[in-house]
Image (cartoon, rainbow, N blue to C red; front, side):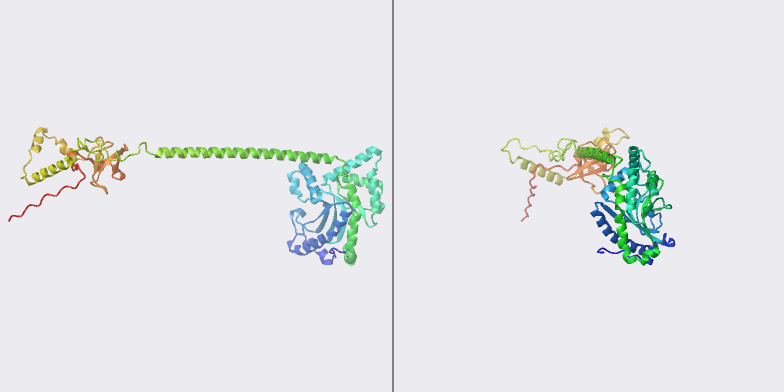
Length: 470
């Protein structure tokens, strides 16, 4: 044989002893048996393909798992429908299967008719089997029996006769039966016995089994030739597999049309799902666009709200409304005539001369305070003195008023009130700076207390140096 051999030994049978079945400690020797069996099965698949039977090969779990009820007491190698055919039928089988049934028996191997090799502690066997869970194969078998009996009117149908002929062609070591106990030699099969077996299997009561079992001692004694004989036995069961198992050529339940309807239904459901997903994606895109537009609108509103209503200019930055000529930013009157360019200079020189004259004159007490005291009522202080000594009240300081800072880091600085917040504070422009100060820390700048502004930007001329006496 060109492919790897199975070559079973006593150690291989011992790996599936009852006391080892639930333990994972013996998974290694069981895995070695599984690997050799799958390698041997490749030759079987090639020979079945030559007969026009396309199958896939799978092995059962070598360790305790949910698919073998947590008991690895045997090793199965399944030859069943290819992946495309199984997927096609599973979509139909899953429609009538409840969740509890799927949880109770998650193994997929019983849902299809199959050829198989099975190795346990006491024997090795090859078989063709149809489990009651293989609904498609069982229904097809039941429909074929009913159609044959209705056509002939006989209890033994032509299917039973065909199956009897196929069983008689098997070696005499093969047996058949419906269930695990009562098995009959294939060479002694009668159409009536086969019809009863098929009826019991079609009713879903017991599995249908046709195969050959080899005892442990015989398998170990003839290990050199057993591999080829097991392969020949599976190939000999291929006609029975083709006769009983459902296929498109062996369709007696119009399953082909059902499968086409299922495919059309799946395609329609897929198209509806894709359309729903597309609508959802479109709605999400429109919602994102609306959200972005609303966010941009809110951002624009915040920017507009943060911008001042009127931006100050250089002409209005230091403009004062407290009195004529009080603001530093107000334009000074120029000369009446364009030719009178020296008038400001002459006025400045006269003002300087008057100041020197006043400084040289003896100091005389002024009568104005006494006159103000005489005019003021008794017990009431002078209003001008009160305004000069007490801080200005909130009603006096207005927007545009020139004020002096009484205390703090900007003490004695003069600025212009640009805004009143209505909470006892004001925003004051101090040159290039703008700060918020309490009204109690501010006082109005009175015209008489302010340093007189120069009428020219020229430097004040120096006084002449007096001559020394000779």
